[in-house]
Image 1 (cartoon, rainbow over the protein chains, first blue to last red):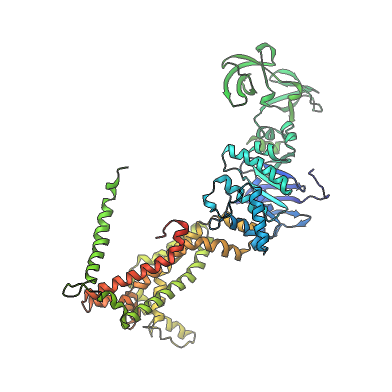
Image 2: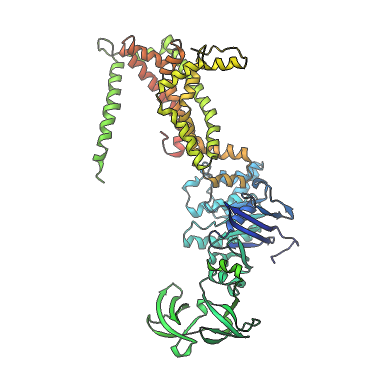
Length: 360
Length: 271
């Protein structure tokens, strides 16, 4: 996995475990990150994504396992000695320094020349679209501006790896979307590896080359945005990456699944006969038709306008289905539900020891 | 919001216990025994004996403040590193002596430092010759540092505790080792706390007289002692008031100068 232009991964986590106060946060986690990748650790709060980032940054020591950077074991190397920089969620700009002094902090410690530092500050402020802000007081800047300065402060040190810990979490929706595009642009311009942590699946899908979905300290799935969205490997991933209809089904034979007593054609093969499976249907794949033309018929219980589409809830066979459509049926109308064979995802039920992971 | 009447008690308090006494003192200071206007009482601070006491007070207050900072800063750092429960208990222990009468505590120091006191007894046990600390400026300094130290520790500790842990991590992330983190982040951000500590230690140290009375045995003359004597012994209230006003003005000007930069930068006052 991962892009590997120089034939070697930039970072490798091997069998990392970490507990806080007896509670296991990371459980035997292994992960390789390729050079120049934009990789996102995605998961709900408490899934271990931030701890993973803090272990890479050197702020937390793992209980077990090793961290390799460019092939070197840096597990016990102090944070200040790592060629890695972090953009923190709360920006963490030094309040007693102005913009310029904040950005120069790392370079001054590296004893760079005045001219070099001035050049770098100029370049970094241009990169984050805040030219001319050198002398501004950081506390007088807006959240979005502060985050840009935090990015500039990290980038000027030319780290080979930039860690971003939910950097857009504190911004409002509009600004967050703008900053996502900015980050993609900045990533392209500076050409370094980004490791991004977020609980926002949409953000992860938009920005990443590769997504690592985590839950309860375990990697659930790794892959490109598209592969994770289209082919979730278990119900947790399916549920977490966008809203889904997840229903129990029985695989009758190859390409036929029985859902709620109805035989439905699909494209999946290779399951055991009569194997109980999870069936995942994305809301946008669940089509609303005339009552008699669907697999199931049910009553529309709610219609919500979401801007570009309507989110429609339909109660059929004691299950509340979610569908997305540009056309809105009447609430209370009798409708039929249909799904095309290649839009049905069939998944093995998780093994018993994983069952708990899926539940929450 | 028409809730101004709620502040009435405080306004009465301020008028009755701050403004009126100040006016009375000022009136007293600018007049002589015949109620005629004079600069004499104000300028009396320049007379050799008073000037000497003032300089001695300055030196003692300066030294006391410096020693308090040197002792309080590490203490505040250690305190910050404690876990919550232990932190609370240690602060309680720090504050506890303040609940005992201040004069009693200073009298205890008199006993400890006296010629046949506890300190010399203990030194004798380990074979060190007795120290003649009684009635010296060293005894005075010990008493003052002891008494004012909590007022330096607590504001510094508060300021250090307010520093976001993320800032320290950010500094380390950018390549700062522990020493640099302290110099570039912790110390500058603790300045407001240290300045309040300085105000709370320097001003009382500058104006106190009881500690010097007890631990100096009447031989050490702080400016506070001179003022006390004018009021209590010589019954020259005009001169006492004049010296008080001069001292107050000196302290205000001095502090304004020290704190000016801080106030300008932060836009807030620290007292």
